[in-house]
Length: 485
Image (cartoon, rainbow, N blue to C red; front, side, top):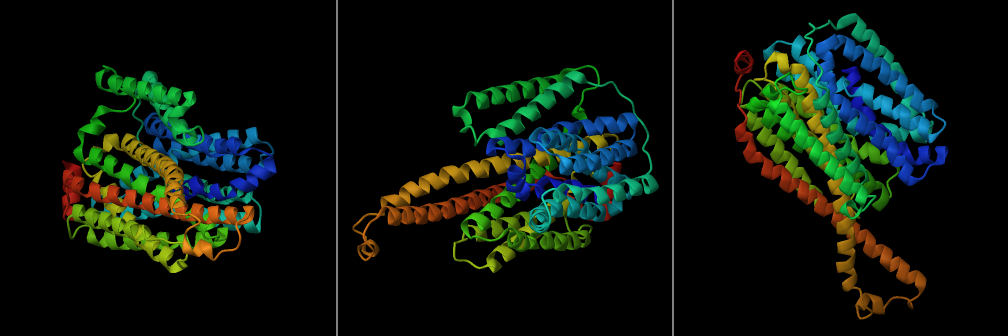
């Protein structure tokens, strides 16, 4: 659990420190994107490989090597003096950290009997979801009070504790050696890497008006096609077993975890700039008012661990999606003069809703999956969640920029010298025009944020009918039966 929190925290903790890192390393805005992109791409490529490695050398060794590498890479990030050094260190951090979350999930599923899986998944979800939520607040506090380097140094003591705990308590799993499917790995890695680069650089390059984006999209589409064809037609053992996708619960769970990743992380990406840029919240206050989202997730963990076994898990997921949609509907009413209570209550509700979806989903998705597929399944599950979050962040950021321009144009149409408020204004000067334009831009940006929240609300509501595709479990005995089947 300590490893899961550390890795999940690191996905967002560095974001708030980027301006300080940029100034310290004398880097441009374009260059700074590689500090984030290198980590995301490396983690995305390495995630599916972690399942295969666990079968070759044992899950405990993979987990232990990943912890040691992640801890050392975090120290190297803090020691970096140039941009290439921190990019290489973040690349190593992503490669080593990719296995921590899926392997921790697999370990929890193995060391607990089926009847205790809901409670185990509730604890696991707490780490995976609270880490990214607390990351901006913790990173902002460290950056403001100490130095941006402590954003990375903070991992070192926790990494050492986690390594010692792994050596002391975690047992090794049986080794199931298999041939390495290099072609499958290469095509999947190319597809994932191209998609991540496309999403990270699309807004900067104005999407498909850039030849670079067209090239990345072509590579991603071709690689994905070759990977899928190879996986289902090869006679040898493919890199990702087709048997994973024959399980209806797992396949449907992957669709839902994609949506959860999209909604959860896209909202997390929208709120800090809204609060800091539009409402002039300091970094630490931004972290404090968004932290109740984690309290909502904790409450969901306690509620769901007691509800599973008493009512159908599908009903819990529906309630969670409905609460998430309700919170997003409330967020469509955000305005520039609102107080902090509105942000706190909507965050609390969304944390509750997301937790009520995530916990039973993580349980039911693996309830019918054969234990032999568990290493691959948890790795692929984490990969789909990460891809969903990347796509969600890119889509809402792009929509925010475009909607701001559209809303600015529409609002500006109504700003004419014939409006009564402008009649009473001071004589028109360059400064007054600039102030008026800034006011229109601010209002247009607020409307654009509201439109993004509305889109995610509609997505949450539209996903509810697909819950029927899951095989529900009404009791802990049913969950155990599903595993046996």
